[in-house]
Length: 132
Length: 129
Image 1 (cartoon, rainbow over the protein chains, first blue to last red):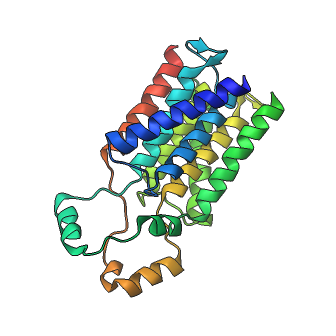
Image 2: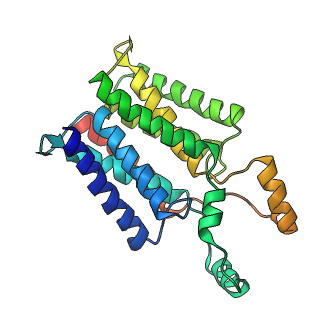
């Protein structure tokens, strides 16, 4: 169970991250593909322990709720990205002589809630295994 | 679906929204208390239907995992919000004096409404299946 759940969480998290990142050019509020992936991966993994299983099973794991939770978290993150209008995009493109380092900006934007969320998700996963 | 069930989920959503808004001064990336509440309420309702029952039971509802899921979702929403503490805002204002007048809110994108629809579908499916 542990291996299959981990595998499903990993596959779905990669697929959803790629789907949002390349399909919709959306990497979440942090603008970082790795952070987007980690939040979705942990969310799916936590869900695999707590959500009531339904639908088809593969390797003993009901994968349908995991995919839905992953998409839900992906949507939540994608919905948090500021929307830029055409004129704002154009103005920014004209103003930007040297593009700023997005990695530095993203790292600076990691607030207290991000780390609480990551810790909480890890605790949910650990408690899920201990309780069951 | 019972009246008490919806009442309990509403109370939990109000409590979580109030704690995040008053204690942490957090209204999510949209800067709207109503949007924050709506997301948490729908997530709690969906969780009440899908999350494995566990822990204390009150009037036939195991509310602990549901409340925990609500807090977790509130954390996701808060984590996604841009940092708005005083020091960061002052720093931004020094760099760009016009930033003070700019709205620091995230607009309701198509993703937000899609999320609403997906949560609503999750709730409906929870009753049908």
